[in-house]
View 1 (cartoon, rainbow, N blue to C red):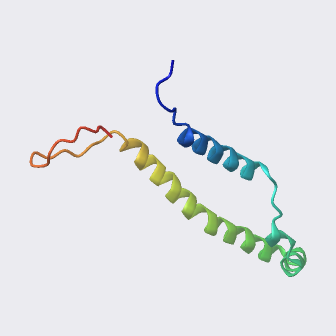
View 2 (cartoon, rainbow, N blue to C red; view 1 turned 135 degrees about the vertical axis):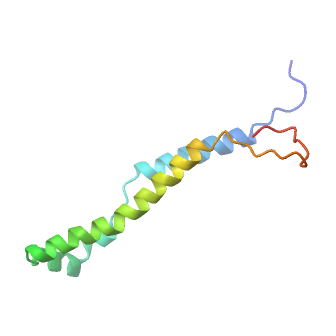
View 3 (cartoon, rainbow, N blue to C red; view 1 turned 180 degrees about the vertical axis):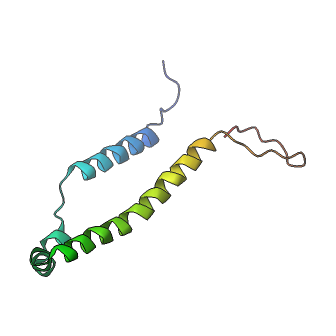
Length: 96
C-alpha cells in the first residue's frame, strides 16, 4: 500500500511542456516575410549582381550566430563536469 499522497504535478508539468513544444515545432506557421510582394518583385527582377549580393547578405547574417551557438554548446559540453572547489569554501553536500 502507498502511504501519503503521490506527487505527480511536476512530472505532468514537464511532460506537458515537452509535448507542447513538440506540437509547436510540428505545426506549420506561415512565413509572412516570404509573402512580401515588394521583396519578391525586387528579388525576381534583380540582375545577377543583386542576387549574388542577396546570397552574400544571407550568409553574413546567418554564419556568425551559428558559429557562436556551436561554440557555446562546445564549451558547455566540455565544462559540464568541472566543479570549482576552494579550500576556504565549505563543501556542499550537493554534487552538480
